[in-house]
Image 1 (cartoon, rainbow, N blue to C red):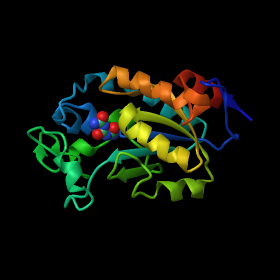
Image 2: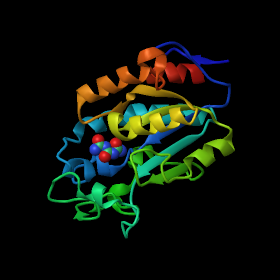
Image 3: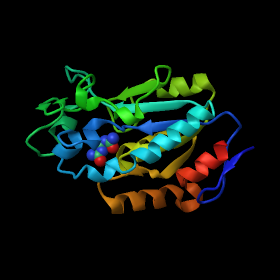
Image 4: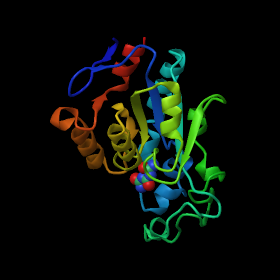
Length: 220
Ligand code: TIU
């Protein structure tokens, strides 16, 4: 069984049975004027991981392993956006309002697009999700079951919100989860550090973490 040099210990996976889940690498979180910035965040640090995420995606494609992309986005009538979620944030604009990249966090708007550098290939799955977790109210679980995949590598943003929520959902569903340390980012550096530590604490209570180079070495 191949393995990735990881913390808290090596991560083994069945040959040919590993998928990459790229969480929410969309303009709404990474570019000025999207959801991330209307929440009051400096979005610039998130852009820095794009080349690393691109390398991971390229490695999975080269190994003929599935790459699954997610986007956080709501229907245009906001019927899948709980009023409580829409009310959060306290900024001048909120979900569904018109911003510089179209309506904020709404599926189909320019701001909801995945960054062009990380664009999904036509045959890759894109999950549009109304929540922070990618399993909630989406077909992700059924798709993974159909692929016979039980081992997941995670990348994307933000570490402690959508990435961690999805990893915890996956962990509770029995998936073996690894987070690529340098292919994820938070608006809050301390939250990223804490998330990596809490995932791998207690013998890997939520999963494993490893640098992207260690993941790519194992794929080769
Ligand atoms: N605000 C924040 O850190 N994140 C989100 O709202 N969504 C995701 O993490 N994708």
